[in-house]
Structure formats: structure tokens, C-alpha cells
Amino acid sequence: MSDTMLILFSGVLGLLVVASGVGFALGRRVRTPAGRATVDNLNARIKAWWLMVAVFALATTLGSTVTLMLFALTSFYCLREFLSITPTRAADHNAVAAAFYVFIPLQYWLIADDWKTLFSILIPVWAFLLLPVLSVLRGETADFLARTARIQWALMLAVYCISHAPALLLLEIEGFEENFLLLFFLIAIVQLSDVLQYVFGKLFGKRKVAPRVSPAKTWEGLLGGGISATLIGAGLWWITPFQPGQAAALAGAIVIAGFAGGLVLSAVKRSLGAKDWGTMIEGHGGVLDRMDSVSFAAPVFYHLTNYYFAA
Image (cartoon, rainbow, N blue to C red; front, side, top):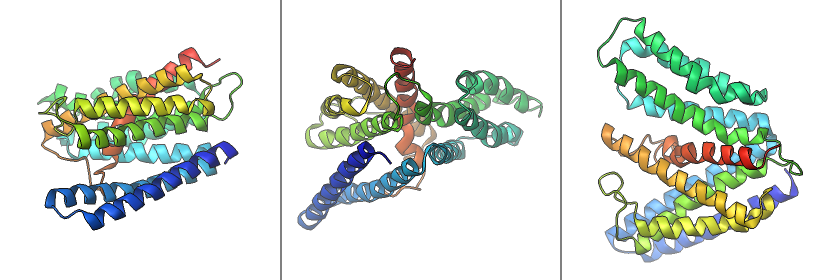
């Protein structure tokens, strides 16, 4: 791990220590049931963050191969969570098996092999054409369009979109070699934006963005948390190949895309009658509950960076 990454992870460690202390203090002072529920949720989130930061730091230390394996495993669990609460039929099993055991490993192998062209079209072209063929060969036509679209969209969201995060390691930017810092920038802005939107929403939230979709998301939380995360992104320009204004613009794009991802995935959950995608991460729900923002933000950040800064 480079000196810059050590500094960054030391800063994250410091923030977690402070957050844990604040959560402990609040837990001793709050007495109302509503306040206790909020503090318990906060402390569960902080505990989960310790584990997630430790895993990310370990992957970064061990190099790009382990990082790719970590994201491949993340895509696997996200796809499993999505399809586990999405109705499928026996006729879809071949398509589902291909999604898990062909396209996940193949997508991440293409990143490892630095095959950018095929990486960009494998799922939106080849998987989109093959998966319905695998289903139609079973001869089941009932609800065929909706069934096929669910699998295609699940693969697009959980594998293709999320894979753009480690694909940042492939970008060739003149005068900039430590691409792990781009990945850190993306993940940090996405997650800080989520946390800050939650905090601002709890403190000042009054007007709901989409009350029937996600009652906890407010305009005050979006603006307060989004602007704060954008300013933090501008302050992190020194770890990127961007100037401060460029870093702020890209951080703003990450914030908007991440918020859109969280809102869209909330609508999907509501349509399926689910509160969370899973229960794997205490205080956060499932893996996809933590990656919903990343799934929209990663391809936006990757392609903006690739278009404007890559050689």
C-alpha cells in the first residue's frame, strides 16, 4: 500500500473511531424509544462500516487481483439477492445459471485481461441476446418478456454496472499511475454521500423527494449531504488526476448518480414488497442495499474519467 493510501485509510480509521465514540455516547444518553431506535441503527451501521473498510483495505493491500475477486464476489451476492426476491420459473434456470457461472467470471476476467472493448459490450450485447434464447428453448411463454427483462436487468445492474468500479484500475491517465486512488475516490464519495444525506435528512428533513418510493429520502438530506460530499470530493483532488473544480464536478456526478441508483432500487424493492435486499450486513440490509448507489455511480464515473482524462 502506498503512502497516500496509508494516509487515507488512517483518516478513515480516525473517522470510524470518532463515530464509534459518538454512537457510544448517544447510546448512554438517549432514552426515548424513537431516539433509541435511531441510535441503535446508527451503531449497527458503524459496526458494519468497520468490517467493510477492513475488507476494502485488505483487498487494496493485496493488489488488483484480490480487488477484482472481491468485486466479483460482491456482484455474485448482489445478483443472488436480486433474483432471490424476483419471481422466476423453472424455464429460466438455464439463463440464471449462465448469468451466475458464465457472465460473472467472464466479465471480471475481461477486466483482469485488460480487454476494454469486450468488457464494455459483453453483457449489454452478448448476454442480452443469449439469455432470452436460453429461456425460450424451454418452451415456456407465460410472462416471457417480464421474466427475461428481470434477469437481463439484474445482470446489468449487479454485474455490468458494479464491475465498472474495479475497471477504473485499467484506465491509462498520463502522469497518474496509482489507479487505486480513483477507486477510493469513487467509493468514498458514494458512501459519504449516503451517510451525509442520512444525517442531514434526520436533522433537517421535511420535504420528501418521493414519499411513496423512499420515505426517508428528503430534499434537505439530498442537498445538504450532496453538497457536503461534493465539497469533500473537491478537497480530495490531490489524490486524483483532477484539478479541484474537476474533482468537484465528478464528485457531484457521483452524488447525483448514486442518489438515482438508491431511489430506483428502492422502487424495485417496493414493487416486490421487500424492505431490504437481504440481511447479510447488520444495519445495512443486504449487499445490494450498500451497492445500489455504486451500481449507478460507477459506470458514470468510469466513462466520464475515461472520456476526459484517459490517454
